[in-house]
Image (cartoon, rainbow, N blue to C red):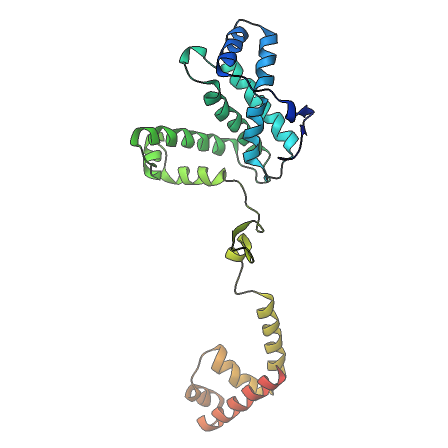
Length: 256
């Protein structure tokens, strides 16, 4: 995306950048209903949109779509900006653009989240920011829940619901040669292809034993009985159980 010159029909190489005093003057004129000033203000802040959407690269969305969504956030920021507050427009505009892009990504996510849960998540984010400003530290889940007067579980569920899904093939670590992916950390280490083939081979080898050997192996290794318990159940001596068990194991080893 960084190397692309034209996005959504806009030549990004020719985007202008407004100085702060120019921006404020255009904002004042825009508030007075000057549509030309409003258009110049939008065009003069498109580079701001471009810088924001670059942070969302790799989310599976095209740069053109993200740029257009970012422009919507920019327009909302222009229309809602209060020139009497004495803050730079970019300070207000960037969070508005980011919020619009995040809303778009969440609404178009492959994982659908209910509107009520998303609304709770937004309230949690607002409460978290307010508490961070008050406490000068990261608030706990309990503190956020207390501020919103909702159960702790609702805070946890709401925050989990808006987390962007991660691909199993996303890299989480690389030392320059080998790359560790998410799949390497969450994969099932018990039901692997290797263990499946071992299980099939073991089953095949077991089926080739005679009936007495199968019974002894089943009692010893599937039911966990001692040789003495097996000898009583089968009706033979412990020495015979030991001999049959050893022969069955050797036979299975050869077949495997």
